[in-house]
Image (cartoon, rainbow, N blue to C red; front, side, top):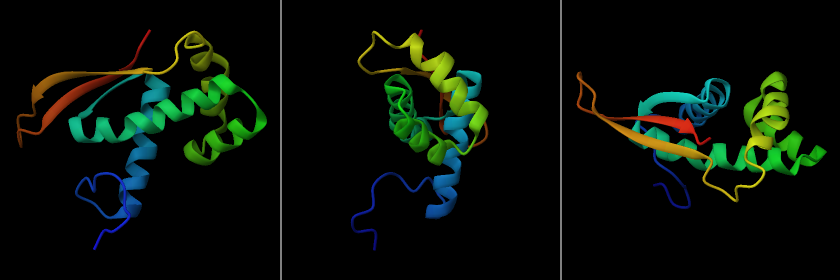
Length: 117
C-alpha cells in the first residue's frame, strides 16, 4: 500500500524514481531545455521551481538545501549565480511545458520542458 506517498510512481521503485527526478532536474538546469514524457515533466517541475527559489534567496541554508538535492557543486553555483538572478522579478512559474505529441514507439505523450526567459 502507498499510504502517505506523494507523486507518481513513473513505472519504477521509489529509489529509481528519486534518482530519475534528480537527473531530470540536473539536465534541465544544465541545458535549460529537455525533452521528456509529460508525466515526468509534471513531476520534476516542483523540484526545479523550489531549487530556483532557493537560488533567489541566496543564503547559505538555501545553498546547502540545493546541494543536497542536486549533488553537484558546479551546478549549484550556476543556479545561484546565473539562473536565479534572471528570475528576480518573477514570483514563480520558472518552467514551461510544451506538448510535442506522442512518441513513436509506445505513444507516450512527449513534451519539451524549458526555463522561461
